[in-house]
Length: 476
Image (tube, rainbow, N blue to C red):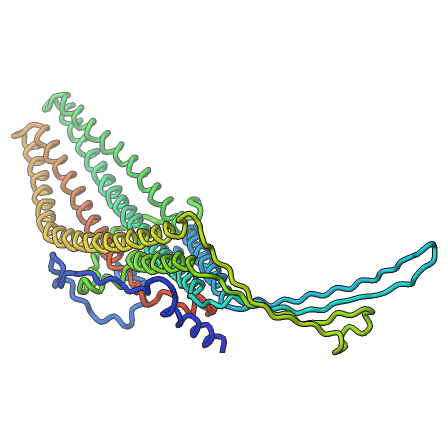
């Protein structure tokens, strides 16, 4: 019965002052500029909803992501903000219902006249009262509508913050694994440079090469050692960032060294129009329009009078012993109306301000949608370009490896100087670093695409009016 009564009251918003909300229709492209046909969407009914990071097939990442929703302090604060918004919406709903109160009093008094007591007398009252301001013009319903939209905005903001935290953790994890691969590369490089230095030192002792070759080999080795140390600092910074995102102190999280994921997953990119329902930031912007539209109705409501009904019934007796006797009953009924005749244009400008607020919300929604399309287009383009570049970079590393081996052999044969060896080895190291960077960028672009496609969010999952106003269980 409670659900029906509140739903019926809210259904009367069609009769409320101010404009009724209609979601603007935006023209969206039929397909993305970068054809996502190479990212075919496969049926995924059995996949955990929203757990997009599992597509990377990394158990360590899976474990860390599971901690975000549970322990992240920022998300906990956002959830509290959502609960606060829900409480405010329910507070606004209370204005639709009558206020009922009760009061009771009892007194005992005595009087002395010229030293002679006139005796003591008791008196008492017991009264029940009720008052109600019928929402004839729909002002209160617009306030409830506005507060409900605000709660839905908060729910969408929470979903967006959760997705952002999950994506940030995935990014930091990928960067940490990239640092691990670079550390392993530099460890191999240092070992190779140490071997080269020993060879050059032996040849210098034999008098077959100048001392400059020894110094060149030493400088090259020292540079690689310094870079290796610096990579350790970068890795620690990523590990600390991951700990905080997982809601833990940095000293509590230690991630063993590992490799970058071999798999670069491709999120299924559906038609652009679906993006409007799958991005939490777009959902928040759309609900902001509804909130601002309701605010117009709230402002317009100030033009109309407030009509209040009141009733009182109870007992009053002296002496108190007969308080609840039918002969001691009292009652009253009342009606009052109040209206502002002159307010210096305040109501007019309040309405005007609310109207401009709605216009601003519409433009913000439009810009949010355009930015979302931009993000997906960029992600698709990046993934396509990086995918085309990967085999080229692999051939480059293979060629540089062969060139370094040839240079080393020719140096040992005495046909080239050590500068040729250094140049070939520096080129190889740079190409191997570029290969790691390219793989990292491909993985980061994959994360960005999952995030820009909403990470499994759907606008229909936002809490509805009944859930917000009736206190139905379940977090957004």
